[in-house]
Amino acid sequence: MPTHEAIAAKCDIKLLADIPLEPEIEKLLRLYFSESVVQELTSLGGVLSINVVPAKPKKNKESPIDNKFVEFLKSFQGKERELRDRLDPLSTGQLANIARQLKIPTRSRTNSSELIDAIVSYALSSRKWTGISGTQPALGE
Image (cartoon, rainbow, N blue to C red):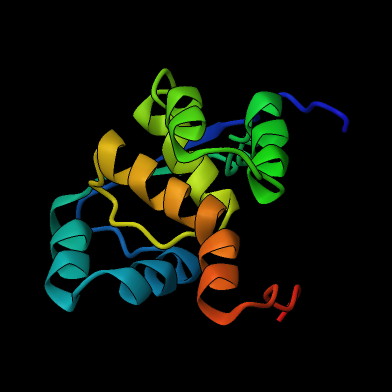
C-alpha cells in the first residue's frame, strides 16, 4: 500500500468591519452559524480560519500472533487448564482483540479474567455441545 504524506492546509480570511461579506463566504457562514453570528462578524469584523486536514487511515490493530492464536482457538481440542495457561500472560488489549476476531460479544470495560472466561467458553463450546447432544455442531451455521 503506498504511503502518503498528510497534507494540511490553513487559510485565514480577514473580515473588515462594516464591509459586506463576499456572497460565497456569507452563504458558507449562514450554513454553519446563526444569523446573529453572521451580523456580528459583518459589523465588527474578525478572522475566518479554514483548516483542511485529511482523515488518517485506520491502522490494522490485529497483530500476527493474535491471528495465529485465533486459528489455534478455533481448532482447540486440549484441556481447559492448558488453554487458561496460554491466555493468562496476554494483556487485556490482546484478549479483547482476540474476542473481537472470534466475534465474542463483550462489554467495552471487560477485565482480563472475564475475557479469558469468554474465550475459554468459546473454545470449549464444541466439546460441551457434543457432550449435551451426542453429535458435533454443524460448522458455518
